[in-house]
Length: 462
View 1: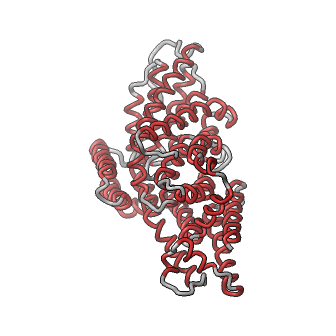
View 2 (view 1 turned 45 degrees about the horizontal axis):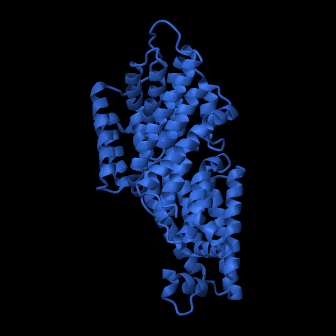
View 3 (view 1 turned 60 degrees about the vertical axis):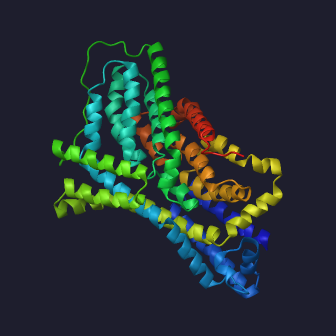
């Protein structure tokens, strides 16, 4: 029975990963349909053939739902309970993402980020080093909303004319952006961090608190990469032009004024400080931030409603993915089936191979990003890794940090991430050229960040 449950679990996850990798359907549909059908199949088999699934899960893993029953059975009442548990486990993460998108969308609409970038662009001189460093800083500012697509749409049009004027390669711009955005994407409202928090059933802010030293390290490494690439560009002859041209300035929001700008900056800083202080739930902070952003910039209901409608699309898209993942978590994790799958792997693999799993996952994450999309990586691979390593006594938080850090660094060189393709399209760089120029820089940042995490005691590979 144990091997049968493991077979159903692995077959379901493999099917989900296949559907995601081949773009057969959306992540939410894959999670809901495959998990739902698998669960219903198990219930029907249990009811009709008395397989003893409930008894097995009670005896081996002490599942709370079954612990109260003398002869537990995996029926539709049990399935309803586990699905509810799965949905409850992702609800706070989904709310966080919805209101973070709305909050940053309103600030972006008001021209806050564009104003910050325009101010930075005033310092752009005909100096290759300063331009490359400025690219890192502007990328960090642009990615405060956690959206890779909007970051490319903001940064590339602002910086590409400067690169071309100075005779710098477009691939250099893309490499610096990939390094900067990948590290910046560790924010608690970034997609990978949200997904990892969903898997280990914790708040994204809890993971981010552990990630802050690693994120700082990564940003310093991104600056280092920018300086090294600037040196390469100078050796190629870039920057040998005369004059000091004022470059393109980004358009400010319709409602942008200096007074509102400083109020918006104060609001943004307040939210970030409170996130670090961890006094309130992160989703509550963004709910408050959203309300204050509306009050400051768009007091008229008609205008506010239009903007909410505008940014709700992307917010709801991610929320449906998370709630779909809630079904997957309810069916495979809350029931104990994921523990069965991990047990089977523990029985098959030799001890030396099991001990190396966290290290292998950390080292291989960047190459794997070229094949696995974010959803398939975190919802297909991470649950199994967490299940195996938990049985070995490794804290799930440590595994979450390893997988988030390593995978995030490679996000914007991955051809299966739509934002990467968008960036390549806008900059005029082929995806093949972007990967070949950026891969080892990004992989190096990933490995150094993991090493720093291990030295600080945030990550345990063994």
